[in-house]
Length: 240
Image (cartoon, rainbow, N blue to C red; front, side):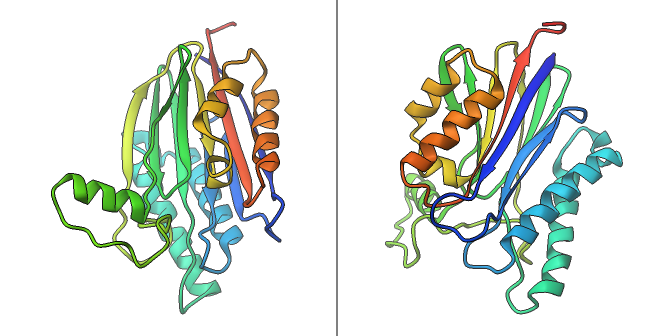
């Protein structure tokens, strides 16, 4: 498969700093986003360390086993070490949603509330689930548990990269088909742009760069309350 990609990040209209970072490495088949965790210091440093470590680990062959798990665990340790230097009391943290494309497959690894979407045959589907208090409560209620109203904001993260808790990673592998559009975005996009709008933009026969520019534009038009970052991968036939 031939991959065409683009990446774009915007500080938004409210934040004083952009704490998002992205991966867009066509030569490695490696794409994704990382978003520094609000409420913890040095979010930009955390997300930058995460994407840098993922890329270096893949280049060094840590993914030769066929799984991103080792890569993400090495990344977690790197961000944890940096946090001990920058913020010994609270540490630092970041989300991480990353895909590694090899041949006709993509491996996904996901921690936090950044997202990966797939647009295929006119349908937009979530390939990740946000790791938030709200979703955790919903999952437990579905199992029959009585879950009291959360004392925290419902969108508070239940998982992130860089904290000392045992890391739980969502890992999956998917088939890649010609015509696919794989979108990785931070919550500055998903909090501002509805899925239906994303589907409209991704349905257009535009370049990845043009599509991303439209998505970020819509995030800003709807308020731009957070940093907005996206990476879009379009899959073409070989030689197409």
